[in-house]
Length: 351
Length: 187
Figure 1 (spheres, each protein chain N blue to C red):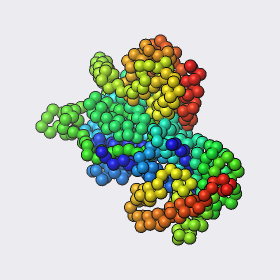
Figure 2 (spheres, rainbow over the protein chains, first blue to last red; figure 1 turned 90 degrees about the vertical axis):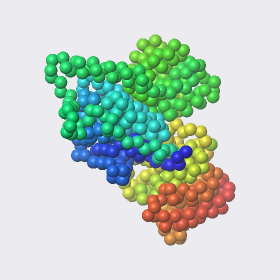
Figure 3 (cartoon, each protein chain N blue to C red; figure 1 turned 60 degrees about the vertical axis):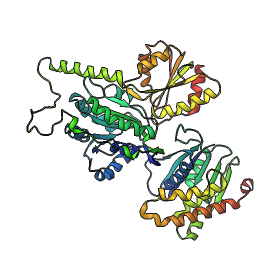
Figure 4 (tube, rainbow over the protein chains, first blue to last red; figure 1 turned 180 degrees about the vertical axis):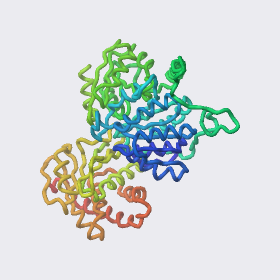
């Protein structure tokens, strides 16, 4: 077992990316994710990678585009306002079927908002964000150990499906420290030779092209059908979620990331009082655990969605279960963080 | 066991380091622990604080709203956090820099002249470790030796020559805290 260390979430994510073979990072500073580029600026030169503090968020995402084009595992990170600026580039990654990992350490919005933790970019992350008929895989860790796991997975999924992947955290996960094990033995690198599509000079082979501009009659529709087929495969294979007390609960709390940690403790406290409460924790926010929720909806009386937003994931919960059971909501916004007691109170109201 | 702790003082007093040293010690003792900084627009000379939760069971949120323990290194921190403390909590005050008394009578208060004691040791910057030593004397959270062990993890390599004086500071704080036997007589 690797030695436990204390690092903040932003640093853990950066180190996990390097372990996953990320060798290109570009980003522009913004709180509460600054420890990530700071760490990368020190570590990337040590592993023979490239760190660039770009002149803007837009250039950073386009640098990721460029590095990915060449087969390099590439990442950028920012926080909410900065992620808004990256949306065009993410749409281009999707349109060119290029892998890339984008980290959003969410803060309060809209606008410049504040620097406190938030989960109010759920819509933006899961419903497109940029223009066009595309999706990105969205993974939401709830602990620093899971940041390690999901960061490494992000690079694998991005390459496997040639798609942008977003890691969706928040200011708490980015800033907090807790014990984490980094397995230093399993370092991976991007195997660019296996990527048959990269642009690395066409000497001795047919030229390739990568573009998202498809003007010929019908060609874009054909391409979009192909993209949708890929998304269907991702929906079939890449749903991840954790279910606690799924078989004997009257009320299921649904929460992801930081709020799922708090909800879990609330659920355990209620259980110890004999209340039949469970927890669904979506780990992949897109694809969303629709089938799992539908199955649970057969057994439970109602749901309680807890978010650090004014209600975003709740829409996916309702859609998943075809509104067959009541879905209640408890949210804090603009930097508010729900407490265990607040969640318990909400559950007791429903009971 | 679960304690929610706030370490607070001026930026530059080693507030973040104090919390990290404690957290490392807690981790090495097999406890669940989280550390979270106040990451607002703090600057050197302004007030800063870090939040530490230590528990035998998994920790939900690293955010501390009602601390059960407060370590305050300056007056603004006392004024900010004393009203938020849980009843029966423990408040440790750096008497050297805080000339006022705590107001609450439902908490345990320990005053310690940490900055003066640090100056006597030869470096005012180790007042944070004196406070930590006093905390462990007052509350049986971790073995005192675990703190000294954590120093090498939180003090950067080029400052490892400072470990000895930090260890001494921890012991001085611990001795001072141990001498104040009955919490009630302290109020």
